[in-house]
Length: 153
Image 1 (tube, one colour):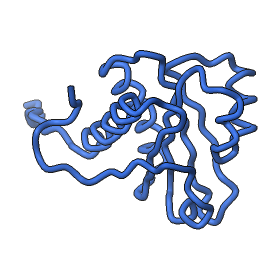
Image 2 (cartoon, helix red, strand yellow):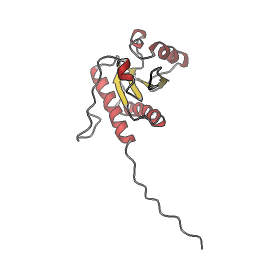
Image 3 (cartoon, one colour):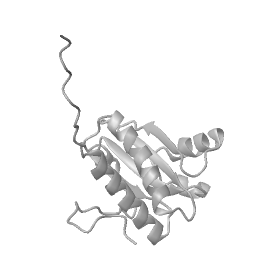
Image 4 (cartoon, helix red, strand yellow):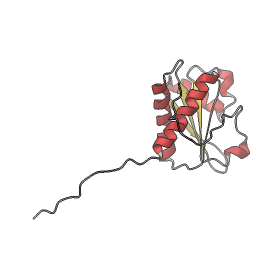
């Protein structure tokens, strides 16, 4: 089951490895989805992985939580890591993606990258689809049908 509507959407490529420093400098933000029970060794493949691992442990974060940090690069790229629960439903994946997008919107990021680490292929695809869907939804302004205020005479 796909989370995306049946229409033409922007192309999103899942990276097979962590982006290089040169790639990160071109981004305002980077979203990474990992399993909630990510192994310690997998943290090392993430930018600022050691700090993220320690912070997750210190705060005792579970599935559905996010971690954020700024990278020490020219762009000061915002890094947002989402912890996806095992066997997460489409709703849970979308909820996590929405949380991640709120941080992106608050930072007013315009150049955003996304990838997954240590997720099975199907979970990785679902997580990336959720990030794309949340990004598209965040960029859509709903119409407002408020009536004009009446003059008090």
